Amino acid sequence: MLRRFWLLFAQAVTVLLALMFIVATLKPQWLQHQGEFGKQLAEPIVALREVAPGMSGNTAQSSYAEAAAKAMPAVVNVFSSKDGSLPPDPRAKDPLFRYFFGDKNNNRKQQEQPAANLGSGVIVSSEGYILTNQHVVDGADQIEIALSDGRTTNAKVIGVDPETDLAVLKINLPNLPTITLGRMDQTRVGDVVLAIGNPFGVGQTVTMGIVSALGRNHLGINTFENFIQTDAAINPGNSGGALVDVNGNLLGINTAIYSRSGGSLGIGFAIPVSTARSVLESIITTGSVTRGWIGVEPQDVTPEIAESFGLDQKSGAIVAGVLQGGPADKAGIKPGDILVSVNGEQITDTTRLLNVIAQIKPGTSAKVHLVRKNKPMDIDILIGKRPPPPKQQQEDDQDDNGG
Image 1 (tube, rainbow, N blue to C red):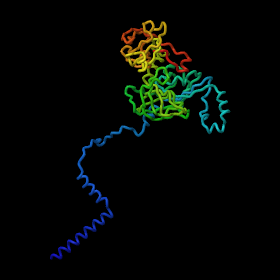
Image 2: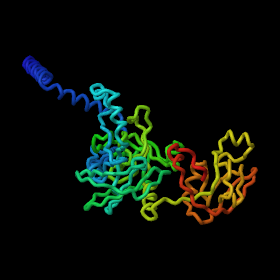
Image 3: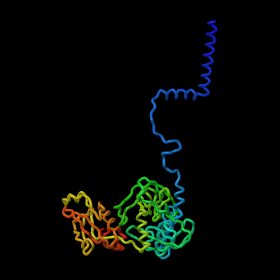
Image 4: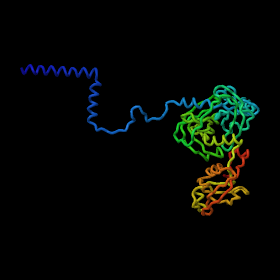
């Protein structure tokens, strides 16, 4: 009896080993799952906060086609020329083109052609108003607009503002596409943006990047600077085009790039829509942009200046000169005064002073808080009208002659 029991036990073990061999050969994952399950039971349970089913913590989009499709119809190509000339051949900068046709011959032909320019613009109104850069249409005798739907027409310059490098054009066509204006107060560094324009004359192009910085100034590009900086590729021909958000709303007018080669290095600048809208409304209403002015030559108060003059004030704008007979002179402001605030607006440097004064309506009174020989005092000043910059001053991007 005992012998029969051991015989049955040996047969059972043999069958079990045979089954395990077969499973290990044909379905080894069955054994692995069992091992992992046992391991999981032995490990401590860690509380993790996870995204709920059906939700995603990643807000990035896989495509910006809808934003591009919304904004692109309102972005136009701007061909401006003197003496009715056409834009220069875009192939002129191609090394292969120059190899076959020669630099000297090509340069001679370009010199014989009247001056021409190529840029972009944005239709902001169904009445046909277009925002672009002033340098795109500067001195042009003829301006031609090409829409994305194939229509072309001539444009009229309604007004320009060289100090922000903006211009307002107007065309007369039916059923014009328009762009929606965005909100700068909701724009943040890191937001995805699209740049739309006509780089190098190749045709309408969309590039993507982020907002790299806000409020960029002291660049020496314009008199009034408050740029959006972006790494979206902006190249020659993009000037006057649109910088839009992921919903296709206008955030800025592309205006300049930092480049040593002429191409994009990932540092581009756009005029914010808030500035563009203010200039647009002023030009449409009055034909020009009216800004406040007090007639001083300011200089930034730096720690070095404060130390050398023994000043307690470490920021603000120090008055280096006062225009005789100007608003500041009449109000009693003197060289050496440090302007700290205007109508309660803090003055941190000359750029801030310029922008604050410019926003005050000429003919109104403003309260200026200043420091004179380390003694604070308040002065009321009647804001004057900012004179237009001389032509040579515009071309050389020289200083603005004060706030």
